[in-house]
Length: 84
Image (cartoon, rainbow, N blue to C red; front, side):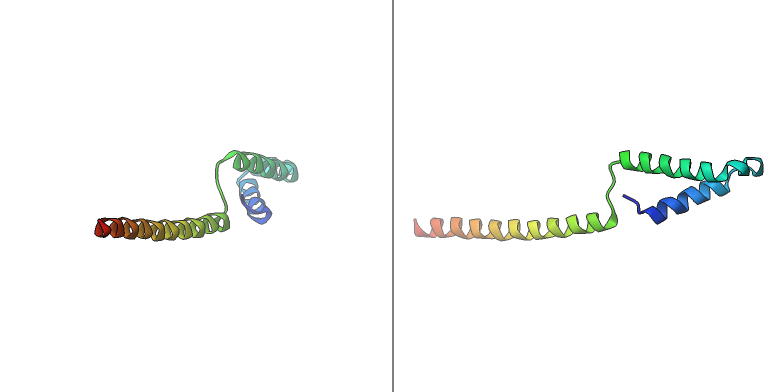
């Protein structure tokens, strides 16, 4: 999920977009914006870039293992055919 600084920045940008007449409620609105953003983003099925990169590395290692196993199976099958 997004870090606290990013959420604060988004809340600040939303807060800066409110009309001048509502500036009296600025601090309260910023906190509400931040809470809403946390709730909505928490409900989304997203991962951080770090989590994505870590899973990408796991996938690559898994792919390499599968390729090695496929090669071994192929070699075993070839050996069986040559023995007959």
